Structures are given as structure tokens and as C-alpha cells.
Image (cartoon, rainbow, N blue to C red; front, side, top):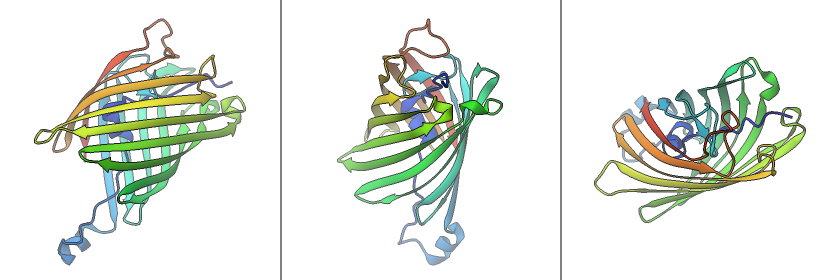
Length: 244
């Protein structure tokens, strides 16, 4: 069975690293400017995190990690992209590359349907595919969302499947660059650990200054890190990101 590489991103900021946002094309902009922007939007991001966490579990052995992403989105809502991060070395692999694609849209209620192929160069027996569905809305100053992620049965998951359910919320503090955020997730299946299921949660704050985003989040889970089983589960994750 795959050694439960349950990747856990630094939830609060790193909703920044993995977030996919629709390109905005304001109807009131002059036609010439619309033509200049075109139907394609390309976004790049580079982030340094003090601990690479995905769904509550550290994949960097609680060491710092460097992450980068590139997303190409069409005004129709279709997008493709790649995201990568350094890891704690695992059977010869110290890099993760995620290839993703999907379709996003909506106004009062937003949606995002996609799929991700998780690739671990040099250790192909860890690669797997996961599908995702997201819904989001705003209530006053708050943005609320739900996520369903499902990895069907695959050889690299020990011929098991995996289900992850999560909620998230964020609130921008008026007249400041600060945003408060929190997540709560439940996982059952191949990445659920010895008991077959696990919980994870986080609470954080981020501040955006033009292209720069700074973040700090408390991340915890009822499962210990697969790379550092003697460490405590909880951690404060710091991040610095640049978006281009």
C-alpha cells in the first residue's frame, strides 16, 4: 500500500498556493482594453512556507518548503495548471508536481469542478488521480466554501479509494490588508491513517500588499506526520508568497 503521502498545505495562506480564481473581465472597461487583456489569463505564484502541510499532515518533515504554481485560465471558466513543492525525502523523491485542470464559474454561488494528477518524480508508484468539486458563496463580509475530493480505487493507493470533505471560511477585516480564515476537514480511506479516517483543522491570518502575501496559520490533525511520527501534530505555519 502507498505510504500515505497525505499532503497538507498551509491552509490559510495556501489557500493562496492552490486557489484557482476566475479571470475578471469588467463589462464597463473600454473595448480596446478588453482586447488587450484577451480571453486568457496567466497567473504565477511562488511561496515559501515554514512547513508544507496538506489536510493537516506535514509532507516536509516539519521543515521549510518552496512551492510554485502556474495557472492558465480562459474566460469561459476552463483552466489548466501545475503546482509543485519540495518534500521530505520519501523513498528517493523530494519533489511533488501536481497537474490540474477544471472548470469554474458562478456568481452568487460559485463552483469549481476539476481533477488533479499528483506526481512524485522518481517514485511513480506514489502517483495518483483525484477529482474535486467546490462550492462557494459570500455572506456579508465572509466567504464560505465546501470541498469534496474523491480519489477512486487505484493500484498506487493500495487498491483503495479516498474521500475528503472540508469546509472553509474567510473574513476580510475592513480597511486593512488582513484576512482571517479557517478550515475543517474529514478524510476516510487510503489516507485516513491506521484507523481509516482522520480530522484536520486550521485557523490563520494573512495580509496582502499588492503582489506580496504574508501568512500565519495554526494547523492540527488527529494524525501525526508520516515523516516525523515523534513530533506533535500541531504546528504554526508561516508563509511568504509572491503572485505575478
